[in-house]
Length: 518
View (cartoon, rainbow, N blue to C red):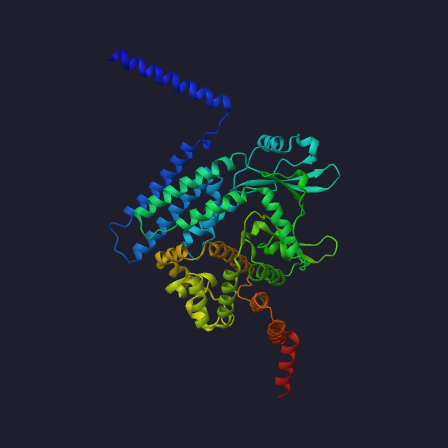
């Protein structure tokens, strides 16, 4: 027996030693092993679940002690989740960033903790970057570029960007995918799916399967940089009538599925008020132009850039004209809206702006919200039902309203999860886009401005008129539609002029003068 035990232990030692030697010889990062990544994710999920199951045993529900303890549990669970994303990298960071944008769904402890993942993405080594370029472009760095900065301009969950100079003297940005992301992504999504199902079994109110479905659909698109290049060219052509929009030009001869070489454009992040102040950039102009751009994408064309976090939207003064420009980066994730969905979404927003509750109910139901249409309206607009009732364009946003929204989000988590599982998949990315844009407006202190609602209304009117014209063969009917469209747009212009007159300095001086004379 002792002899057998000695043989088995000797064999195990040899296998273990040879495995260690093999891994060392291959210079394999243990983090690349699926079993390590799964074990880390499973352990974090188990610890978080156990914490929620046991923390409230001896605390009475609804007391001040209960809510204080719940906030602490949320905070430490969010930190564990953040640490897991940072350790597993790639897909995990991408999913964590998405969760960090769900202000309407997750408690503040989660969103504020996970938002840092935008600045905590991993960096590949210079040798790894050289290897990817060598494999995909078939040449060494020195053959392709005069210079190539080793420190990246920015690192994201799936790739990092380096500044380089071509042999013709042009400065470019080279986006290089992290070497193992493509291979790991499908396995990571499978792991996330298994763990979310396990958590849903423990906590039936936790219904986040929609997040897995979105990741399954979107990750392959985001990992194909040729797709990103085509999206960039399409949106640049589509919005070419906006002189303030700048989209980097693509260098196709130096681009592959894992490498994207584009024009290098500098600027400050769209939420950096200090940068704008320093460069004399008008915050209101930026907010208005951003709204114009996204209203056009969503309502008129149905081709929507779905990742407008501050790192992907830069602002600058054009070096030649000194006019303010918005630089739109990272075109990997776009949502194509089906025509019927887009029309219902258009009409829903028109109803929300006007405070037309019957329209809000009708089009929310058509978009799949069912009896949860009041909740859907609040999630979509980031406003309370009181503001929706009055018409969101006529009620200013207050701090008290934001606090009420966050409180309600925690109370109605099961209903919100149910809602997100009901609505069409197209809606999920739009909700994420809305949240990111709302976050930018909040930082710029331009949220719910009248100009943004006017621009949105213009796009809705144009989109609905275009759709109606496409559905009729009658010239007379087309003329009627065009005249009605022109009248609606004229009314909006008059309303905008009245608002400008009302808010202008000249009007205030005249009012003061008349009051003085009186």
